[in-house]
Length: 398
Image 1 (tube, rainbow, N blue to C red):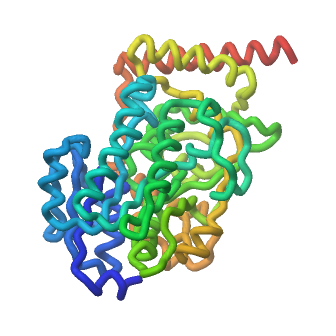
Image 2 (image 1 turned 90 degrees about the horizontal axis):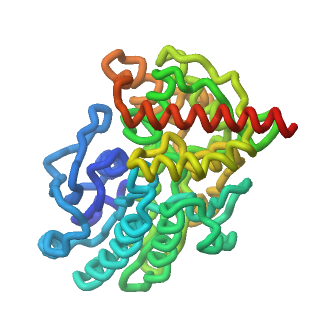
């Protein structure tokens, strides 16, 4: 792959590339032989101390991919490939706004592909999600060949919109405009400001105390998608699409090689953050019934819910994903987990330099916790009431 990347001068456009995932992609490309130029379009690009990027070959443009004027100007650069990472609705207050979520995730993707085609872009790789296949029931070793759920089965607007965009991207693939979708699950890593930071903050606040599982007597099992493996998959997918006669219009689950308990996964950073391991078991079924009320109440008050129906379901149920198609067609071999103590591999010398535990071991990197945020206080209070109510219901009916 290193030699393939160095053959020609390439120009890539990464939509939403100012994110953690975007930075990991740039780092992976540059450290594996890519000598071309990268343009990043992002309204709020971030910098990451643990990610090494040669800024001389990267141009950052502050703006939205929904702005056609900005895109037309960028496409004058003879872009050969577009990596589309931008989406909304997975977390935050916007998750309750169906119109906005679909306008951004679906219509925005449709319009972006239309412009790519008009400007002669050859390849388009979409950052999809395992949410396109998860509807709140256990998934074991899910395959890309499994049938997609019906639209009304999804648990939130984000999942349904990602599924619609995913299928649209695949349907648009042709020999002149090749596409691929990479489906990730819980992207994590040092400096990840979403999943990893959220869990780290919960541990720091002393809220990582309870387990929820739909499977009596054990944690639910799942996979993670480290930033390193996600970036690697983008490079591999692009290499495949550049091959004459190669596959295209294909979707791939991209997760780590390890499968483990969803609470066990975070064990390495619990002592680092001064937390304790969860000991309380919260009954799943009554919480599943009560949580929609909590989520609706939060959205109606303009407060991001601390826990959504989708988050509860994917946390409590087994959901594991096969990487056999990615192995076979992309040559994807996942790097070891970015949580060193969790990884079962023996060769410790191949660990990435900046691991999650190493990152949080440094005092300056501990999440800053403020307890006077009124939205957090209201959301967490409602969550506690819902959890307490579920425990009472469970004791009453069992």
